[in-house]
Length: 114
Image 1 (tube, rainbow, N blue to C red):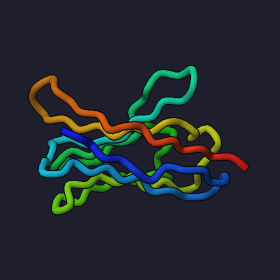
Image 2: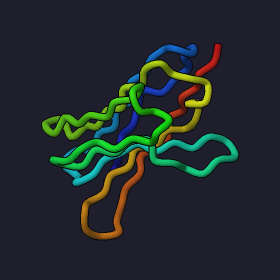
Image 3: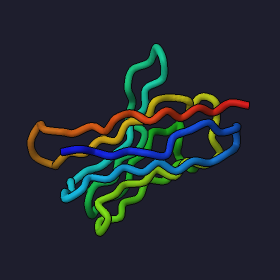
Image 4: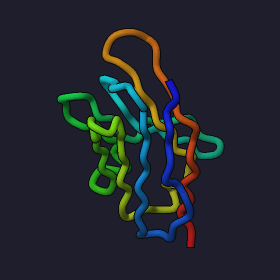
């Protein structure tokens, strides 16, 4: 399964970006976004299960919104009020409720800097 992620870039503090990730032909039970900054472990940023409530890491609550368009097999991450500490490579993730298999998209760089 090829996850196709896009939307990263360079933005000033306080700015916004929207990431997109498409899973052509597949709908997964859970889709989410992770990020990894240099020297840090990869962390879950947000996840959206089918029919469930979205979950966010505390540091992005109130600023980021994850959403899914099931018709387009796409998950979005709307990132507002970006901070320099949000700078990282962001990865899309897809998996089902049952089973260990999961899929990753290629990372997309988000840089927040003035």
